[in-house]
Image 1 (cartoon, rainbow, N blue to C red):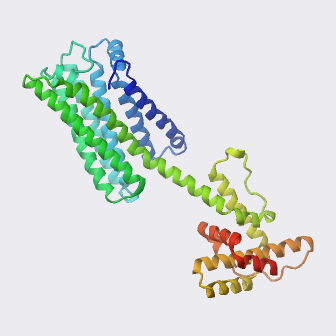
Image 2: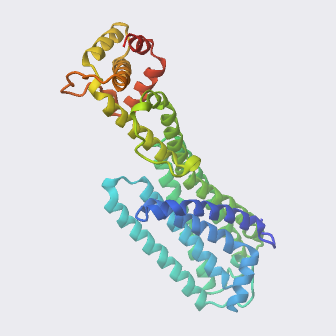
Image 3: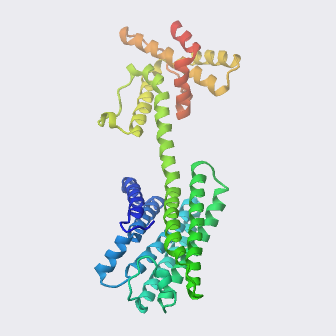
Length: 393
């Protein structure tokens, strides 16, 4: 898979870099969001791993530094950092606000361990001798070389430890969650199972060299393919729940915005448009929904002198006697009272008149919650009782 032009590594790296770019605006708006920051670090490290593992990059690093195999400790350091970033992200992702201090402590220790391993990898490379450039089989070619051997074994041991830790953490947490989060954890766990197979392939090839056998194909062909698929699965597993959460949130807001249209139309003449939609068709749904809900409340406030508690009580009694559930009956009763008030308010605009005594207590109940507003809007659009009382008014 690690061909001479590196496309098998550059293309996945470019996709991960694009995903990181999509997360940057969110981090810019919420710079203190530790979870978002950890996701971005993970995506950047995954991009770096793919980019630096490609053959052209290995060659360029060696040429730039003038040191044969200088790319080896760089790649090993990035792989170690990527594994550490995964563990830190899982800690922060799976912890609630009550575990914040413990999460910071565990994350700090994980970062210290990761940095220690990275420092040891580079020190061992500096102490060792690796004069012959090996782009594909460094692990097995230097399997018996002092210090270089220890560097390779250290990075594989750290990689294996991270793989086992992540697999256990993901499997344990996956039992407690559902939906996209569980799917994402499954992808991460499967990715780390492939990482374990990667480590087994590497250890097997190195052990074969110690036994004067040649199993290099495990290290040069099998292991890189496993690592590439694994990194993609892991990164996808982390991104999928976040993307799913964003899409679900956007869909819920668009649906609520649409469901509130009947209520917005009912109060159209009584609203003053509290927010100006300067973005036109590109205005985010968050602003659209905020405007619609604000205008609805503004319209209700405008017609409130014409709300009649007696009208609402009569409609509520009829709906309950008809067997309608209490929350739906309350929504219909509120819709009836509002529709009647809009008619009276519209008549008063043309022929000024005293609205009468205003209710001491709020007449409507549904506007107190977003879901109540939606039920009330649905009743305005579909309820025969609303049409009947409106005609009577």
